Amino acid sequence: MSTIRHLLMAVATAAFALIPTSVMSASTGGLEAGVGNVPQGTQTNSAYAASFKNRGVTNVFVTSRQVSCYRPEVPIPFNNGPNDGYTGELPCPRATTGEDIGRQQYPTQFGTSTAAGPMLVTDKSESDIRVDPTNPNHIIGSSKWFTGAEGYNHLLGFYESWDGGITWPVMGHIPGYEGWTDNTDPVGAFDPYGNYYEAILPYQFYYDKGGHKKYEPGNEPNHFVPNEAVSVAVRPRGVTGVRDWITTHAGHPDYVFTTDAGLGQEPDKQWIAIDRNPTVGGRPNPNFGRVYVMFVNFNGNGSKPYVSTAIAHRDGTHSDWTAPMLLPTGNGATNNNTYLYPHVDPDGVVYTPVVNYASAQGSCCVDIYVDYSSDGGVSWNGPLLAAAGVHTPPLSGAGYANTTFEDGIEETFAVGNHLTRLGPNYPIYLAYESKSSGYGNMLLTASYDQGKKWSHPIQVNDNANPSVDEFQPNLAVGPDGTVSVNFYDRRLACPAAGTRAAANAGLALDRSNPNYGGSLPPYGATNYCITSSVQFYAADLAPKGHNVRITQHSWDPQLNSPNRSCPCNPLDTFLGDYFGNEIAGSIDYATFISTYDDGTNPHHYQQQVVAKISLP
Image (cartoon, rainbow, N blue to C red; front, side):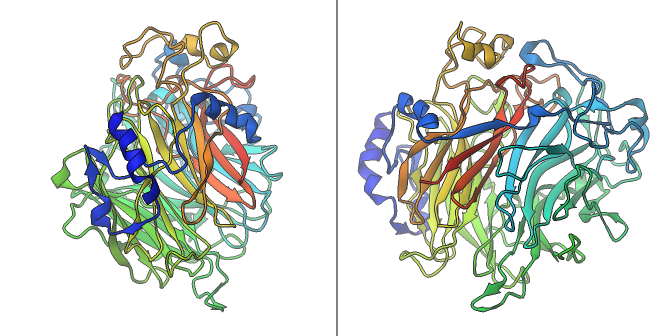
């Protein structure tokens, strides 16, 4: 604690200095540069708790308001209840979404799907949100759509608003890929015409008798679809039906990349961005409507990053995908490269960070690089080192104290839209989580010269008590250049026993937790329950006020948390790798998880909440 306070005083005035990356990676007393450097200063828990009301934040529990069902390709015969509210897979009671719930097999399904009927969608975890550039009141969110948290079995689902997030009348699973065991990693982007593209990662596995997921070439449950794929579904502009998606291209599912080679070829971590700039430099943009889909491929020798592109058409179709191109990776770095976040700036330059797991640093740390292309992805510059030796949370086995969920993606990325006095190019922003103090802290840095130099990192979270975890930063940039960083936050204690808040949080269901040494249920527990926060900055990263609480109610991450490895491992639960953050006009929208019961979530499933807050 004394080291953090010392750093806060010593470097608070250095937040915006541009320095070489090699200096930025240095640490003091074991802490990474930036930890404790909180330009806005810390705030009390009571001030933070009151900020939800004081800043006029609103919350809408979205996915708990309708009943969604679908027929899974592979049923889940496991139930970890009654602890934490688990129920196992449940038959569909009566869907209200209007989606095709699969009373008969879906066109892509085969085999084991005949053993299961439509099942209730329970949890909705991991979140993304996008605003239509042609209509700021049109918003689409997406998340994992679970029929069984214990088996980590899900498709992707979506939820849609036409009135700026006040109501969300349309939601359901995204059709076309029901023949795979899972669809994962929800992320979307609107093209210039108002068509919405969802990038999808469908893959196959089956369960052994112990509940472990098995990935065996030749033994896939469905022999009529690829083992894995990176693919796309498009929701055309103007449609209103839950089933209105374009899911095929050239007579088959809209594949960007496929593999039938099992563990030797494993695509993962897909992301998408679309160039919506009609002109660049006063001239027509030759890459107007270019769709960039990035992913990594685990090919038996680490993971390698790739990009493939197509041109979006006004009717929601697109050109053929280009052959995947290997992106530049760190000079002398290992083959373990991942976590791509493509974004396009107003000059039509597309950027992405690339995280490298540097072997010389063991399992503790990663280096983060940036690549960019100025010619529509034909050629690439980089890699440029942005942050070195970042202490990351563990990737498996209870990554955070007291609870059993773990984290995945270390960083988030965004591009600015206003030139500043600090450099000749549009800003690029990188936020990442550091656990060098033993607890998660959100760090933020910027470059104003396409990644050659980076500002001294600053700490985003302003909790006065440093012994709590903050995690999963999510960046967005508004039309006026305002930078928004959202993140999950554990500074507030769980509700006290006997309170209405504790009852609505479902804490009484939390009675067995192998990673907690205190008494259960966790009434009043510290560094346990979760809220969400936002911090705003100007384009030069001058802070605009303090962290604002954007979750009205704290919630328990143990309830109905999906078991990522198998139902037999209670130390490997998951909330997802990221949640959504998007700015439209003067409103910041966030979508994230809560298990709280606001009156619509009595079973304390992981539900999607959408928060709205006006920019400062």
